[in-house]
Image (cartoon, rainbow, N blue to C red):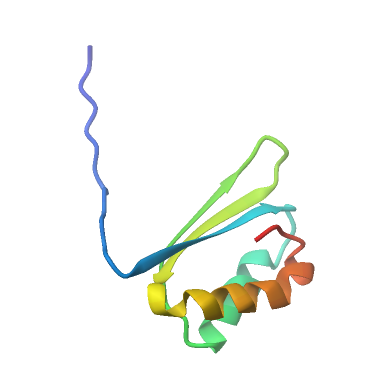
Length: 86
């Protein structure tokens, strides 16, 4: 049996994970989210995009814990634009 190396495991206090789920596959979604965060001074430390079996996008975003409430409010404000569940 071949051994598998595991890397990239990270633990960091003071961080929050925000997930944006079931985003239809259309242009501009990532730009809308990243632009909104950037315009409001929210630093994205890590962004992972994946797709589910229905071809909808899912974003997992790591931000500073102190920005969590503001980030959720901003995402709620653009929720209709990106057609997602937050």
